[in-house]
Each structure stands twice: as C-alpha cells, then as structure tokens.
Length: 334
Image 1 (cartoon, helix red, strand yellow):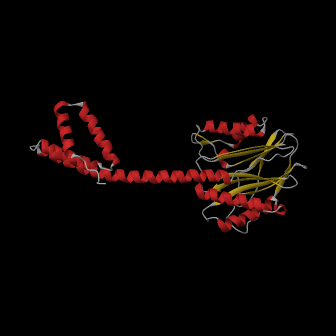
Image 2: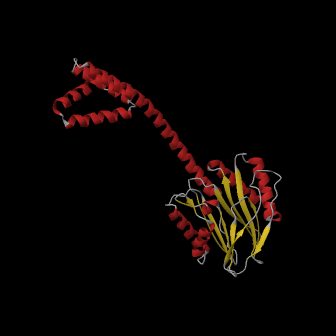
Image 3: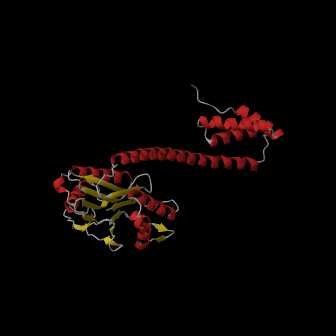
C-alpha cells in the first residue's frame, strides 16, 4: 500500500474557494483533511508547508513580509511537531505504566488479602485505604489451634510496587512461622532478619505485632518502630498510649524487641493504626493525638467494623477526600 500523500491541488482549491467566499463547506472539508492527515501521521509542519505552497501558487506576488511570516510559522510548527511527538510517546509510556500499576495493585490486593477471624469474646474491625493505587500499609491476622490471635500491622518506608513485594514477603513469612514462634518479640526478630537479608537497604518497615489469648484476655505485643497504639481502659474511661521501643525492620540483623503485655477486661479496647491516621492534616496543620482520640471515642460504642469505617470517613472529610498518606486502623473490642 502506497503511503498517504497530502493532496496539494485539492487543498489549494479549497483555500481559494474559502478566501473568495468564506464558504463553510470548505472549512468542513479542511477539517476532514486534518482528520485524515492525523490518521496517517502527517505532521503539523507538513500541513503548514502545503499551505505555503498553495498560497504561493494562488498569489505569486505575495509581499515579502507575508512570505517571511509563513516561514516563521513553519519553523515554529517543526518545533511544535517534535515536542508533540515526544509528548505522545510519554503519554503512551505513562498509559503502559498506569496499566502495569493497576495490575500490580490488583495483585497486591489478592496477595495481601486477610480475613478477619471470628474470635469468641472479641469484636474486630479493620480498614486500610491507600492514598494512591499501591498501599504501603498492611495488616494481617493469624490464628492457631488454640484460637490465639496474632495481629500484624505494618507500614513500609518507601511506596509503590517494591513496597507491595516487601509486604507480600512479610505476610508469607508470618504464615510460615510455626506456632512455637508466635511470641511477638520472636516474630519481629525473625522478620527483621528476613527484611535485612532480602529487602533493599533504602527500604525499611515499621511493624506492630500482638498476640491475643481469648481465654485470659492477655495481649502480648512488640513494636519495630511502629506508630504507638492506644489501650482504652473501660474501668477508668481513659485511653493509654501503648508505648514500645524497637528498631524498624531491616536496619540491623542484631536487633532485639522488647515484649509488653496488657490484660483486656470487659468493654476494653485496643486501637492499632499507622501514621496516616495520626498525621492527618487540616490545611497545613497536623491534628494532635487528643483530636484523634476524640473522634475514636465518638464512634467506639458501635460494632468494631462500623466504627473504624466511620472514623475513616471522618478523617477523609477533614482532608477534603484527598488522603495524603495510606490510612490503616484496627479496633479490638473486648
């Protein structure tokens, strides 16, 4: 098939007709020329060049100023054409990248999916919403034969596809540990070695891991530099920060993690979260801890899942529905 060529004669006749009569039909036909040219990748400068040729044939005695101005336009359109081609190439690459990220996000959702277990005497609610397509936050529940509940919540320092892969590694490492290694301090020490050996040195992971015993109400927990959670004591009607110490995962293979414990009584609650909750901003101002707890207190009488969703919607509205960081929140209600 021969390559498409712009019909100079037709274009000249259309131009002549339009100049003479300002005929709308000529404009419509010119539009069809443009569409056809685009379909065949005719560049803007080629169309300008044809226009100059047609104009010179119609008016051989064009003033030199008009001739110069048309050459100026031609050079301008050459630069425009090159820039436009580069722009189109970037758009195509961006489209391919967005498609890949969408696929990766769906894979992440599948790989990191976790089911909220049914634990007698404990009402569990969890929500995790990414600020972009890929989620840098992660939570996971693990149960053993004795119905003890392991709770992991983590945040990758570093986002995107590498973060998703790191989180997948964390999840499957957690699932592979035997029940004899379920103590939170042991879990974090082992995960720390996994991260230190397998994750790029520019990426770190903060993580909280807790182990809840439904028979005694005991919650043992350790933290690897993660955002402190809160323990609500119903008897005192007061929130207490669950302060812990520990290096983020992946910094040193010699890191150890101190273990703490609390005993949850009836109507007590534990709140676990990531910094997307505590670092919520109103305009340029970060909200403080007391404001976060006020919002939690407003909804905590509701079933746990309904409560975390309403807390999320509250903070979403505060930020004009534009999350600046991934948002993850877990309620454990006794």
